[in-house]
Length: 551
Ligand code: ATP
Ligand code: MG
Image (cartoon, rainbow, N blue to C red):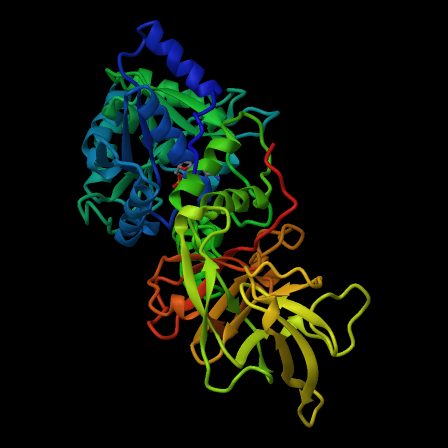
């Protein structure tokens, strides 16, 4: 696929200016996931943005696990995140864990206490929330706000030593309970939490809050441009306050961009985890999941995802991207790469009565009609073939050009066949067709005698390989996903359709991850987990056509 020159965006402009003015010598970005779930396509946008920005200006990007919340975090997530970032095609410069900085964060909190800018509060979480005020009214100062520096130092060290129960005490910044920015009303810096941490084990029983930890992490690593999503815009004053008052040597700056939303796509780790935990899907990498691992298993390529992220660009205003845009990019990527073969998803047997019994003939087939370099293959043809059940109708409506009694169609790469007789079972279902073929009409022979309006695909019966096909629809549609709580009740019952049919012998030994275009059906990926030699499983990545155009 053509790689487009990365288009400009407002963050790039800022970086270019900062380098030109000498404000920074080298751009340093980071991708900071919390290891509490698998990455989704929204994260891919952030990954591409951070890594490509640094690459373009010959800077560095760190992968940093923002693991300050031990209860929800797990090494399984750490490993999956590393794998996904690498699979997308990016190499991090530094690999860090926020939890490695717990010691330094603790020291910085002490700096604040010594300056009279932090205090230990005995109020409960509820009391703190209730006294925060509203957008229109100021908060109420804590009765513990006036504790002396000595008392605060002592209590904070006792918090660390494990003398208090969860929730009994917190460390709060002392800023301004009347600030119009609610985030500056004495935000919590540290909480007591007796929990095992995936990285630091039982070393700590106090943990820093995200808003306090994040700026420190950026400063410790020398990050120059700390890019986050727009929800954090109101946190920026506190971010800057932490850097300044903690007297960090390096001063990073935060920039916000709009998070990615896609139509009919659940884009929240919390909800995706719920789908996994409640077994509504077959794990985080279920091909219906918008996770990077789910998209990979479905058959998306890193190239397609990166091209998509480049196309959607980086904006500061919210928008929702059409899911067909993502599909457009995988079609573009596979168009010239994928072998074009035939698969019958819902087979109907056809006997060609005037074709000699026991004879097999090998027909020439192009591997990719748009890419001659992919060459040709030979496909078998004989007296018995399978066609798609949908390609025959007993009583067709007007303008139906496929098979019906007395009608003639073209078999792709082969001959014209004419339907002479229909065999029904006792219930009246069509079980077999008897057709005749015309040897004059062989594909590639230059036959011009007469025309037919329909071309259908088929697979020769004795060489056909039994295969499974998995077709997908959105797990949940936007119309259905109205209230956050009960979203699981709105699951699309048709999100997975499993069909058993046949593919050409060409695909008998295909391995997990191999991608094909099946004539008229779309692009498919060999399932990397469950496919077996002799009975391949194909996940549909995307159908062939869409009305969607990328402008
Ligand atoms: P979620 O809300 O899905 O749990 P998160 O923001 O809590 O996502 P993190 O692991 O904290 O997930 O995010 C890591 C990085 O990815 C952050 O910098 C975050 O801004 C970015 N990110 C997360 N979701 C999106 C999205 N939909 N679009 C763009 N960037 C995103
Ligand atoms: Mg988060």
